[in-house]
Image (cartoon, rainbow, N blue to C red; front, side, top):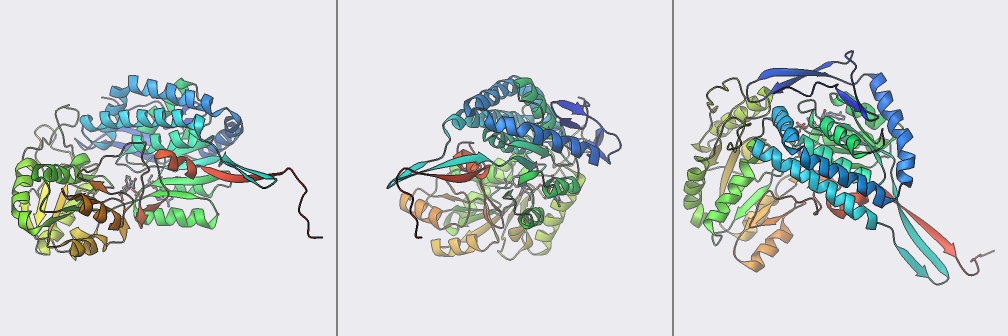
Length: 486
Ligand code: NAD
């Protein structure tokens, strides 16, 4: 198991290194060991990335969409062939189980396939208004900045770049400093697929590098996945420069289980909403509202199934929960667990560091359930980003909707019920960018994804995402006499 070790950045079609940049250590979350080192982009590296992207974009914008799509679909095929290698790198960076990172590689291949396919048919509209013909063009924005979070680094790089490139833009992508390698492999794959050099450049760095890219007058847009405070900062900066931003930020999503829901399905929902990716997913349904009549049965069954979660070596294909990503994240999650105990919640299971023989230095935590959680407790209000479920009892529909919506965040939500009318009524009333009915944490690339309120602006995935990577120009052709008041 070795890190990529080919150079920190990928610019104009090749790996590049400049060791003058501040070091970025690669830590394997399952052992806590430093396994490699990259370097932050220096101003010279950023200049290469910006000028290269700028030079390449104009021709790319003129390339027929079907041809752009063909290159993306070639990248899809290469990624599918290199799935195992890509997933291992992703697991090394994030500690997420290989069973999950394989699935992520497939998801990014799906994105390349989807955007590579639909772009040929994506266009403006035409309107005949009397003697005037109007038509619109969906024009690329130029050089777009992508900034990734650490929990889904491959997906962040893949979703953003597939959309941006399909639409005729170039992208400079800055991965999270905590999980920087997947984007480098993706850049290799694009190069192998025949993407002209400069169109997808990867530069490493901490927040300041992201900020420098947004600030540069040669960039036209920023798409960020990250926390709410970072999103507000980046959107504020982009706004001050009149650049559009797509912000995919945090969540504190409600998962509502009515007492007519099939119990086992609802339990599966709770598990997928709290323990997948060791709870490090923005859409997680960590506020589990359970109707009082079934509360005790549901908690008992969730605890039984949580006991069967296989926490262990993330490189073992049978593992379904790896460690947290970092010592800092472990300390943060433990802090939330302590706060819940101090504020009077009942610990049903978990709450301690998990012990994994042979991997003692890793950032392990047990899957945890709290009951007796009140809406005002810290764990019910703040994003934990760890495998900690809060179970809250409720009595009726209006009450639970009011409580579910009493959050500054609005990323995802779910309702479990067999009552068709209630399912759709509740889905319509929940303040969130997405609602699952009788399911959780499914995110196909064909469907627009993103948050409302503090959870973000704009959408990734689906045709909607292409709208956010293009601008509309309207053109008028007068075929009769031009109107003139003079
Ligand atoms: P973070 O906000 O700390 O960092 C995100 C990225 O922003 C990193 O690459 C970081 O280097 C960069 N950054 C930091 N300051 C910056 C600045 N001033 N200018 C430009 N870039 C800057 O987030 P994180 O800890 O990496 O990720 C976890 C967060 O991401 C969670 O809140 C989670 O909910 C959210 N997330 C959201 C989604 C979504 O699609 N909505 C998906 C995954 C994660």
